[in-house]
Length: 95
Image 1 (cartoon, rainbow, N blue to C red):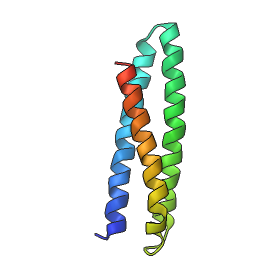
Image 2 (cartoon, rainbow, N blue to C red):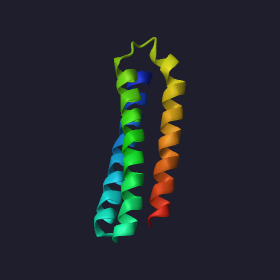
Image 3 (tube, helix red, strand yellow):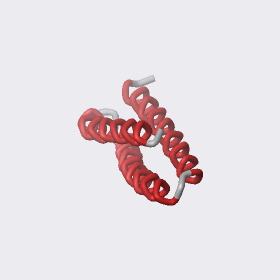
């Protein structure tokens, strides 16, 4: 497996984890009271937007050639770091 393919696989796994966390938040939102539901839904919308941006970066990486993917790596890592922090913050806030 090439370095690029391994990196893509790692990113895809993180994206899958984030999707699962967002789904958990959605389930909690459905059981929450009205005021809390608003907070959940705002946070979920923010996470979904960030996740969509991260997924777009992954698609860009997958489309990049073996030589060009290294150039995309820094931007991807920034998006991934931001998403990881946001997911961790949201899940800890809504325990």
